Amino acid sequence: MRATIEVSGLRKRYGPTTALDGMTFTVPPGRVTGFVGPNGAGKSTTMRVILGLDAADEGHALVGGRAYRSLRDPLRHVGALLDPGALQPGRTGRDHLLWLAHSQGLGGGRVDEVLELVGMRPAARRRAGGYSLGMKQRLGIAAALLGDPPVLLLDEPVNGLDPEGIVWMRGLLRSLAREGRAVLISSHLMSELEDTADHLVVVGRGRVVADTGVADLIASASRGRVTLRSTEPSRAAGALHAAGAAVSAGGGGALTVSGLPPERVVAVLNAGAVPFHEVTAHRVSLEEAYMELTGDAVEYRGAAR
Image (tube, rainbow, N blue to C red; front, side, top):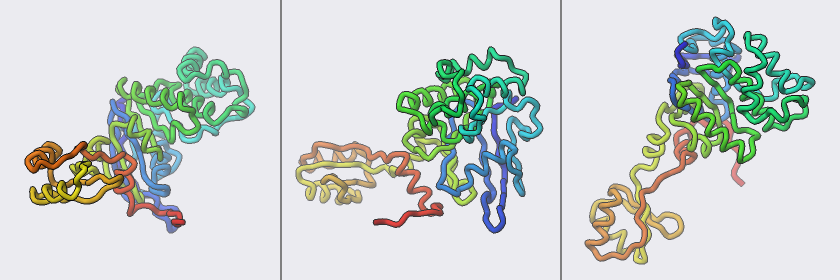
């Protein structure tokens, strides 16, 4: 089975509300793709359509070239985590996985393997209803990996994890992608995606806003700006203006320079004998780039105090 997710022209309405409006993107093998957007952007609906839990009004979503509902033993093809609390609280963690494994023709040996992988062997025989959110999250990841699938869809995979668990999850997602799997993760934590994802599909109001590499998005949002600090900011600004740059006051007494690369800024200041003690390429965070990109697609805003 090809390790790909193909979403093409998905449209979905719930009464008067348009949830998906032509959603189209592809998740190829070998990389972690972040799936991000404001609340109400269509992320959850898209993932449910991919997994056959909802039907689209138009378009199609394929996993390895096939509709999810046509897959025999689907856990061997697709692993998914949408709701870590979707389990029988009276069962132990191991019994929960055994129930899933038997439905796919898998044995107890594989259950023990994934419990070890996610660090849940010590708690495997405790009732799942007494698990913390982080433990339920780890059990959900174990369930997603049970069939050793080539495709993974994970919704907020670090939710409820402690710092050690978050670092572990980053490494796990990267290793799964390096093995040639297609990994799609939905998250609101841009700082986590900046350290984990290779590519982003950014959505808003039911359609794709951007389909781009993480590094490319950050570079584009940074716009080649340079941060400058000088003991004589007025002289520095004058010299740079004369060289064709746009200069504005930044935070903490710094100047933000646009229109000249860092090496040219240094050359202009040296030529004018203008003192300076910092010239750095300005780099926005992924969160800043995301906020700028999706500002017009935010449906729910809190009021400023």
